[in-house]
Length: 104
Image (cartoon, rainbow, N blue to C red; front, side, top):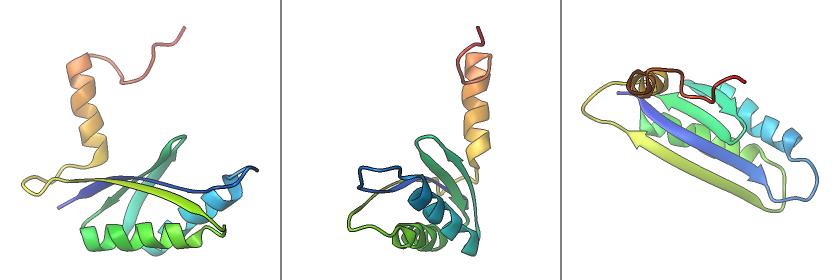
């Protein structure tokens, strides 16, 4: 089974969050997950929810701040094995084009 999730971990601070977010992303390297960071969070894929939760916990704990905001959205499709890129491919097939704005 493949579990797909969107993870957003950020310190609640006034200055740039980039350094702390980088620590959260780097913490994922210690787990058996694949991931890709985008402007709104990090998409993570794992074989089990146990591995996914452990990775998310590590990312949360890696942020050094008095207050940390973490959001985890999970898609645990239990009857079929489908990864994140396949989910996008299906939408693009329906659109008949890439799932992003057209170049101007």
